[in-house]
Structure formats: C-alpha cells, structure tokens
Image 1 (tube, one colour):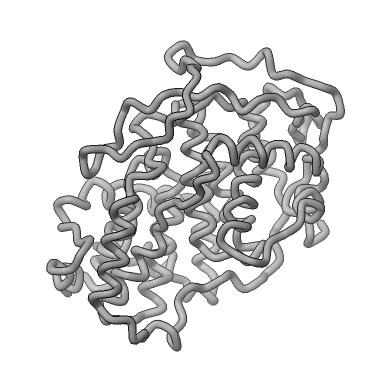
Image 2 (cartoon, helix red, strand yellow; image 1 turned 45 degrees about the horizontal axis):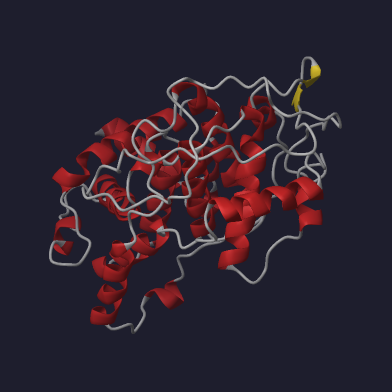
Length: 364
C-alpha cells in the first residue's frame, strides 16, 4: 500500500443524520456551556460534569470498510478501520529526549515555579470516573492505538498525542458520539492540537489524503469549527510530557532508556479506559516511578525526589501503577488487538525497551 495513506476505507456519499443511533438512558443530553471545573479532591475527578448536546451531523455519512463484506452501514464501529490500516513508513519518531539539551541551566526555583503554575490547571479536562462506558471501550482503544501511529507518521511530539487523547475523552464524557465518528473526531482534534502546538502542521488536503479521502475537506473543516466551539477555544491542556521531563531532570539521572521506558508505559496505559480520569502529573509520576522500579529495582531514586514540588509517594501512585502494569502485560499479548506500543518500543531505535521491561516483569 502507498506510504502516504494511513488507513484504507470507503466513503458513502449518501446523507445520514444518525437518527438511528441508540443512546444509553443514563447518558442524558442536556444543554450546557459549562467547562470542566477543578475537582476539590486530588485523585478523583468531579462527577458532576454536565452533559453537552451532540456535536451535530455531518453532511455525509461516514461508512466503514469491512474486509469480508465491503462497505458497511454507519452502525458498524470503527474497529474495521483499525484492522485495515497500512503499515506506516519507518520514519524516526519525534524524540523529546536530547542529551545536548537535557542538562539545562534553568534555575531550579524557576523550574519549580513553572510546575506550580502547571499544577494549578492540572484538573482541566479530567474526565469523571465511569465516563467511558463498556460499549465504548473497544472502539476507544482502537482509536487511541491508531492515533499513536498517526502521531508518529506525522512526526509530531508526544505532547500532541497525549493532549489529543485527553480532549477526545472529554468529548466522550460530555456528549454522545456515534461510534463511526470516533476516528474522525480524534483525528480532527489531533490536527487542532498540532496547529496549537507547532508552526508546521499538515493541510486539510493532506489530512484527507492520509485517510484515503474517507473524510472530505468539508467534513474536516466543519467538525473543526464545532470542536473549537465545544472546547471554548481553550486548548491549554495539562501536559503529561512536561511533568515527565521535570521529574527526570530532577532525578539528575539522564538516561535515554529510562525516557523510552516511561513513554512506553504511558502509551500502554493511555489505552486504558480510566487514563483520562487521572491528572497529568500523577500519570507522569507513576510512569517514572514504575520505570525506575523495573529498571533499577534496588535503588531509591524516586524517593530522592520527596522534597520537590509535584512529588507523589508510591502509596499515592499505587493504584495507577497497578493499572499500568496490567496494561504492559496486556499490550504484549499477541492476541490483544491494540498492541502497537509493544511493536513500536520493541524496535532497535527505542532500545527494545518493551522486551527489556517484559523480561524484568517475568523475572520478578
């Protein structure tokens, strides 16, 4: 398949209003322009997030492609999208870790002031527990797995990916989304975040071409406007990678293997349905702590950070780290469908960190 196409699908040009989509009774739609408010608690998101009206209908029906039966109706989930993806070209992924830049001269006091500022907004776009329903779990995991490939293919920094998933989960928590729109919504969110974070971003024409013109330029632009209004033009999303960088800098233990291990753990974990119910700083801290425990089991490196801003004890991080461990085991299973993180981090350019961690888990 051609290298400039991420997926292979077919578009149905017939008009559809998605009136036949079934909505669970407990997910009542109500009008609200209220954004997510910070939770008074530290590790549990506020449950009183009001539902928003649906994003609206697109001009064209988005059909899916099934290998066995061809073009299917809009009722089918996007699972077939994930199964018919092409292999992405072997492009070097954007690497935040840089030995030349890692030893910065930033004053510790200034750096911790930045972290304090970030912690104040850490509760933005945190989804309430239970916001991802059972019937959404499989489709969501497929979309997130696909987004990892898209982010790598577009050569975008990891922060774009994590912010995209955070915003996508916010949409799932706040409104009812037809399954066949998951991929389109997530891809447009990634495009919006890319434009917010970088000066270089793909055009709508390139986006449509990457998706084999399954989605039209008009659909992409129309949904972009709806999403910008939905988020109130506020794309200042807590950055998990910012905290990862901060913790590793504070460790004074620069290691490319450690950084790759942390990113692998995070990419495995973000496939989990509850990942967006955990604030960014806790996710980063849990991933760094778990990576240190696996790579350096006899050391007390994480505890050495107990006096810094944004430190969490292992007891506070335990639940999240347990979920991360479960995801690491799940992703390496050949029967698991969404295992691209394992394939990605088993490559030589990632120091085969996925297989290293797996061996250590088996040996422990």
